Length: 222
Image 1: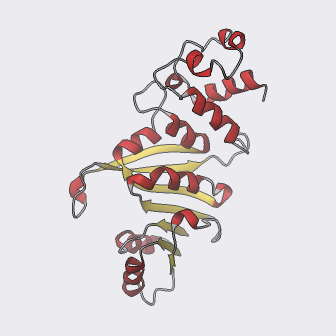
Image 2: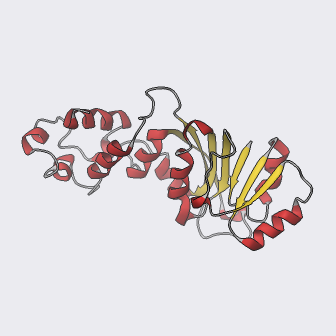
C-alpha cells in the first residue's frame, strides 16, 4: 500500500496505481480533490482523502510506503511527520528541492551537513536517488529538484525510543554552526566538563551521528 502526500491532479497517482494494490491519495485543495475523484472514478484501489497532511494520522491505514512531491516550505515538517510513523513506515520516497535533499542526505564535514541531516538520519537511512531538472515540470520551477529515499531504522538499538532529548542536545551543538562545541555548550554544561572533551574544539558539522550519541551520553550520563 502507498500513501501519497499532496496528490494534486493525479500525475503521480496514476503511476502508483500501476504498481500498488492500494493507494491512499491525500490532498487538501478541494478543487484538486474533485479532479482526482473524476479522473479515477470507479477505481476501487484508490481512496482519496480530503485532508491537511499535518492533521492526518498516517498510521490509520496500517503499514505503508509514503510518497509525494513536496513543496519546499513544508518538506521538513512532512518528513518529520512521516518518520514519526515508526513501525508503520516501510519506506518513504519524496521529490523535493535539490538543496534540501542534499542537506538531508549530507555526511559529516561537508557544507550541507547540519541539524536537518542529523534529525533525519537519526530515524532513517537516507539516500539521494537522482536529480530532476526544471524542464521535467510544466511549468518549470526556478529550482532543481531531487528524489530521496528514507529507510526507517526499525532494528532495536538503531534509533532511540524517545529521540527528543538527544535532538535537543544536537540543536544546542548546532546553535551557532560556525562556532566550536566549546562555545555552543558553555553555559549549558560545566566549563570543566566541556574542557575535558576531546571534541571541544570541533564544530558540530564534524561529528557523526554516533559521535553525537557518545558525546551526549558522556555529558548527561544518559
